[in-house]
Image (tube, one colour):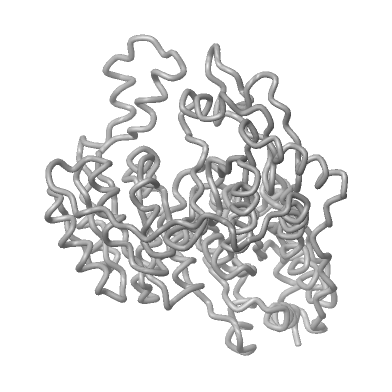
Length: 514
């Protein structure tokens, strides 16, 4: 057994079932080992940003890591933007990064790079294997690190000679530490704040947004009168009929400050204290109002379920008493193609069990109210702010949950970063419907020009935000990737296309001209 074979067998034994890959020369022995050691589904992606985004989507839905296969430091560099998002989503992931053979590094061949330095900002664990004998052990440690709460990107650097040399040994994944129990003092402080009722808000993130934990949070709110809200962007949020409905802190700074302006006591559950996405002249960075008492019930690494259960018991709340969202659907709209009308289409037609991967950016800011009463579904968002995750995220989610419809709500500018993932969807015959909001601009940046106080933008500045010279043709782009696609310019056409897409079990794209 060589090092690569011991690596693959250790991954299989450790529960890793999928590898999203874009390999190169240094990784050929790992690729060959995938044939000789059965048990891993290998999914080819045409760009490393797609590799990382797909592994993130898979982890969010499967609750366990996929492996990635990246080609040396530059391949890792191509993946960094979506690895950043995965780290912010606290998604478990095992990165396998090939590298030059140990004895070849000092020759400074063209692909020589500082792989550890590139990996450090986006990884919770990093190791470079030094020999074939330790590759399996290192892989087992990587799996354990990725699955340690709250979930981590673990990066294993694999020099080519450690992969091809004989002497590989399969290793067993060490015991994974359980999430940290919260101290009784944190429960007592949260209970005291919750009992104050009006003026107290629980800010929820990470696994606090699962159906079971939302039931507990909803029961606490029903018993005490405190309010619930989710952080701005969430890795996975349970929504829909029969579930506790929670809104998010809005992205625009003024709306966020307005949402929290009357909060006197903010209790953090599974996230961190809220801050503005960017600094804006004359506006605060911290979103909690001045004088608000901010306390933490549970960090993302803590036992969030246990903390909410203990808090519910402390205030005398029962999960069955939570107020759950009633089933309701808006009527299908007529008229102009505006955000509110699109939200109504989604609310009217979302199927039960849908997985919504949302990179709408500006168009989707108002989608939550009219989709609240749709059948139970999961909503996945852009967690780290680095655009270009939507299409790969949907790809990975579809691999993890092939029996569910994945609906990708995609901004046209963001989609262009990683549109190669459409090819992977076609190759794998994934059940994904993509809706591209074709406003033919970086619309969010037009608002940011005003928000940061930029004065009198001229033609040069505005041209940097425009995508209409020439206009993108998403139907042709999708067709070129092997994906069926249509363009719609009216609500009636959108409704018809959406219904058509729901019947498909292979990739389908709708370009929605705004």
